[in-house]
Picture 1 (cartoon, helix red, strand yellow):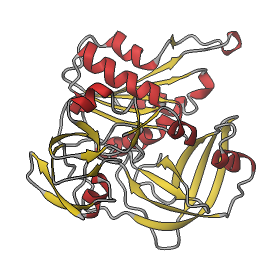
Picture 2 (cartoon, rainbow, N blue to C red; picture 1 turned 30 degrees about the vertical axis):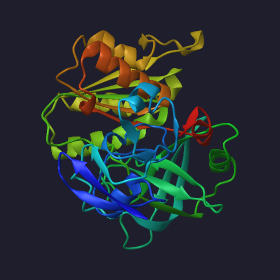
Picture 3 (cartoon, rainbow, N blue to C red; picture 1 turned 180 degrees about the vertical axis):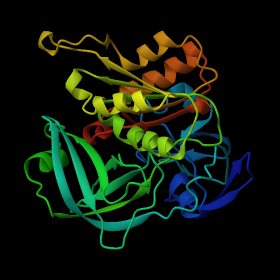
Length: 346
């Protein structure tokens, strides 16, 4: 059985089979709804059910609270229709002409820049280039059919290789493989580009980027593209880590700040040790933003990193600093363990 879904306020509509998610069917029909993880964990695809019934699927409570569900919201990446639907959500025009492809790639270079971060460079087949928006990600397709997502850290204009930043998750099967077994010239397969984490160019609002750990990767892509294109909006990057080494490309961010008058860089460290000799700011990265900004109502925020940081920023920036929820864009970096815990089925 199939159902008809109508998107408001645009009035666009598409067909969904009963075993399909709303998001999957929308993307298949060429309607680009916001999304991130596609696993019910990040909340980027959240929208309102104005009419009709859905099966809510499996999701993390942090992505959709009981109060939000009672108010009519659902996560379209896991929700399946049980009747015709009318939904309310934003549509994204910037990705509509970029095809999602499955491609092989070769490991060109493995650069271990800290004890737990590798910068991986991937080469595509000759005469192939991946068209993508800065901030998007790819999914490796593993031999067992499982997938692992990583954002491109290079800007689209610098596409001789794809640059990924991979943090070692102890016990994580894929990152254990990357850190302990992977060799240069190996062949991998991926699908992409995916995601809706990219700079909205139809706004002139000042931009705050908030990153934790390797959440810096897609923000690096966005910023390098913005600098090349001459974007004049005021931009600031708050990048947080437990120790200074977690800010593994701080020198690059400092270089940007020195050469681009409309950009500032604010590094934050939460758990520095005495031997780190850290003289900079301390604490949680999203709280540093709030210390510096009493009113966020006139800003756009792009947050990427640990889910707990992203959700805290979304909540606190909105409720305590007046940031409109529609001006908060996020990409939560989720491990396989993250996806397996804290889930709700309904």
